[in-house]
Length: 293
Ligand SMILES: [Zn+2]
Image 1 (cartoon, rainbow, N blue to C red):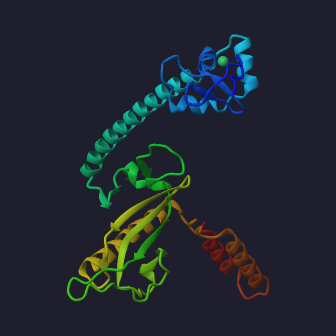
Image 2: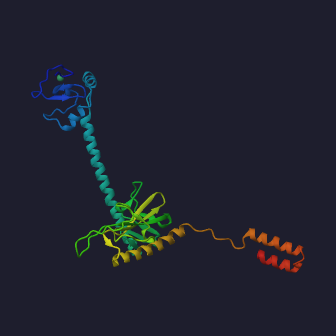
């Protein structure tokens, strides 16, 4: 085995051999082109970087007194990673501060909440802790406007629970949606399972955002009072959300004295006049009434 640059014979185990993609170098030549550092030891990262270099490339670098910058690139990457971490930490801290500040404002407004999702009827806003929100876009969104609420779903996950008394039997009877399936809108249907592991509401906002508000997140029997209370809460929240969504989608009010039907009425009336059924006076009076003049 020979160094691809200087031709020095290399003996495995006696000399440090730097393995390239398609050949080997002696340590001296490898250091000359900065493929490995000048220290006694070279690290895994250096060995890995060297293994991507071809003999032709290494020779070119050597002949033209160029040096590889893998080590600098690695240092730079480390520095950038550290900076990124610091930045993210800052953003997290700022986000947490902002959330705490907003939360106290929401609480002052007597905002109601489902789990960690707060609804402020005064601000007309929903406050969401970042960890609670699933965003398509990586924005540190903390609040959503009521006016952006488009829809919601109720999710109920069937569960198996063990009975406190007795043989610790798992309740698996009559699962409705397979082993993993969440049951959408379960509350409107008949429940054919004995326990739930989760009851939540997914709120859909404009811009493809959705957040999950959790009512219940531990295995609960569907015949328990806890479950009954959750059911009542879901109903109440559904009604509130329905109101918000309805307000966001106003139905065009029917215009009083609809122009089309007024015109039709007048034509009918004129026909009655022409047929001699109505007198001129009766026609005039009725006409005034229809046109509201
Ligand atoms: Zn050499």
